Amino acid sequence: NQYCWNYIKCDVRDFIPWAEGGNLGKPSHQEIAVEMGLSFRSEDPTDHYFCGRTPLQASENCHRPCPDDTPLSCRHGEHCQHDTACDARVMPGSGITEAPSLPYDSLENYKFCGMSWAHANGCETKWCGDGSGCPGEQSCYADTGCNIQDRGPLPPSATPTFSPVPYDHKSNHFFCGKSYTDAAAQCSLETHCRSGLHSQCGGIGMYCWPGVTCHLQDFVASTAPQTASPTIDSERPTKSPSDYDDPRNSRFCGVSWSDASDSCKNGRRPRWCPRGTDEECRGSGVCWADTMCDISEITFPPSLKPTNNPTEPATWSPTDSPLE
Image (cartoon, rainbow, N blue to C red; front, side, top):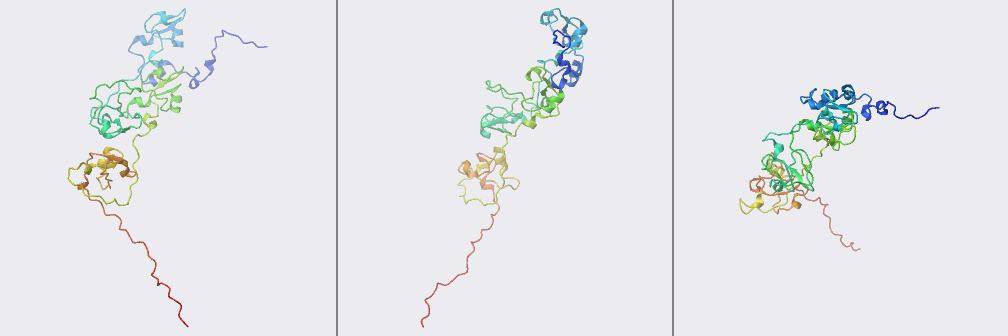
């Protein structure tokens, strides 16, 4: 003998846990602000202007801010109430981060994308010092002659890039979730909200949480190719360079220009590619020109002494059977 009644003051969301998108156990705006690293109360009094029939109702609901101090953004019968317990900074669409910065001489400022180190050194490609990937088949090269803080703006790209941030910047720990626990459990590249805006998370009840135990760099695949295992086979005989300044002298293999330039140091066994082709590298990266190595200054360690193939004991050819 039960009936379904409408316009009841109960709300089903009051029985759903906050971590699952409901209101049960929902933290106050002050608790959320503190969790986000904000000081409560805000220095801007308009952050606490919210709609409601009374100041108490506005503080309990915290559903609609009215920073312009007018009832235009409020529902029928509501007014813009001052000095509420609500905080507009924790509402979707509000930013919480500061402009990121890097020291001028930071190594991250010199990382650029390119098909080769020389291409990246042209200072006209995408900056990759923030750990972001490079377009197409390009790789991220370090130690270029470019500094992102010196370069002027480039034409807009199809995929916008962010300003550089150091590894320990707090924005690396910003992730979306219905709650802090949810953000920590679901953190990934897709849930990262680098801007600190709740609106970047999308969806009702989703917020951008700071201080999450995940780190963005844990989800960014390294763009540096793997170095091939060293080999012990000896080099093929090559002719001596004709001149000391012959450009072929400085052509060496490596996974990057820096790697090729370091291949002749610290006892490493460099692989020379005088013809300038990648095929000469045989799994040791690609051929780089104008490296810091010079074949005329390198003495290769002796190769393993070859041995002759084993031979069977000599046998005589058979003779005719003796005559009787």
